[in-house]
Image (cartoon, rainbow, N blue to C red):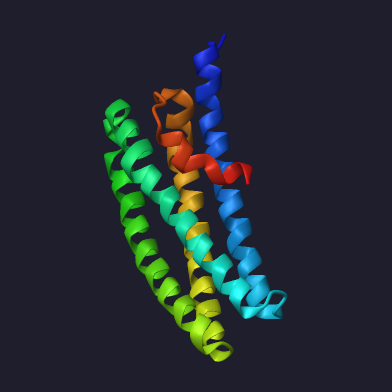
Length: 161
C-alpha cells in the first residue's frame, strides 16, 4: 500500500510527461503559426521568445534540482543524467540561435521568420527524442521515490498551462 508521500512521488513521472506534452504543444503552435501566418509577426516572435524561456527554465529546474536530487538517491543513474544534461546543453545552444533569429525577425520580418521555422523544426525533433529518452530512463526512479524540495515548481509548471 502506497503512503500519502508515495502517492505524491508516483505522480512525478506523470507530471514530467505532462510538462513535456505542454512544451511540445507550445512549439507545435509556434511552428504552425509560422507556417500559416495565423499570428502577426510580432505575436509569433513574442510566442517564440516565451517558449524559449519556458524550455530553458524547465531544463534548468531539471539540471539544478531534479537531477541533483535524483543522483543523491540513485547514483547508478549518473551516466543517464550526464546524457540528459549534455542534451540540455545542445538544446540551449539551439535556443540561443532561435532567440537570436527571433530578435532579428522582429526587426526584418518575412524571410527571417523562415530561418526561425527551420531552427524550430530541428529543435522539435531533438526535443521529441530527448523527452522520450528522459521519460523512459528516469520515470521509474521518480516513481520509486525522490524527495521533493522546490525543484518541481520549475520542472512541472508547464504541465498545467
